[in-house]
Image (cartoon, rainbow, N blue to C red; front, top):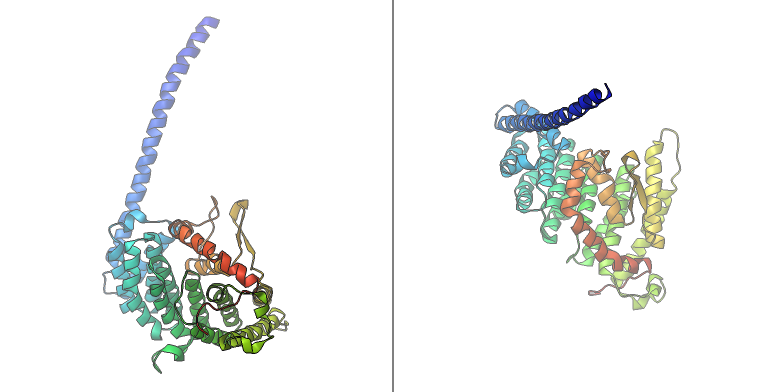
Length: 413
């Protein structure tokens, strides 16, 4: 009995192994078939959306754009855009030119996703070059939702596609015309921005400024920019004040630190004024004015009917700006990643602007369970991580100078 049972057991083990192996193979083949079917089905759907963009009816194009944007939000569609990138771009730009406000906003968002998905290459540069003229026209007099969407799109395509600082500067000038219409444009050609548009323009402009590693613009022009932004610190809209303050902090970190070097800390004082160049005297007095305004904004009192969350955001932001301008203290912040995956820490204004709000606002990014980064963020970091890390390293010595009060201009008086 015992032997017969053992024999049956042995026979069962052998056949069971074959069965498991066969079942495993069948399961793998079935899974692969299902995955292939899913991909084919998605590509078929996306092709239908692309075809719909050729339709004359605006509502049909809107629905197609909603479908495409939703698909790009959920996955990095590299295979889909491989041979369709420029075709998609041209249809998106057609919607920018022909569509009503909703369609234009969707198309601008779609162009941003296309640029990020394409990565850092020839296609991305072509996306930037071909998009700027149409986006600039839409920016001039469109309704607020269109203007803010276009500003976001301009920032993203330039961030992704710019090959040098001159190209980035060109787009920043377009944005500055929105921020300060009388500064560069002819009278009447650009509609005065609402608070929402002004905040969007300031945020997009500051974001692009953080990508710059070298400038050839005279310091006099930067002083004019800082002066105008200083005036915005007294704007009646809290969001405008915050955006202006962050822009000022980035300018001092990137531009002022880059222009001022090889100094001694005693130049930071106001003693021996005659020995200092006029631009430096003005810059120091402007800095003191900004510090005074920032100090007040960091301690602004609350009151009945005031949004406490927004007020606290203002206080926190301007306290960081005050600490930076007055003491040289960097704005260390931490963002908790999902599923207890750790903390993302920023320690410069460049990092804070890049990693904190802007991309989250543009793409409504959510953190995934695997490593705290959305698929879109992963694409961004893979394409541009090395470049951004290099920029941070290049600024280390300059930031050290600022912290020590290093403020000697390397150019002319």
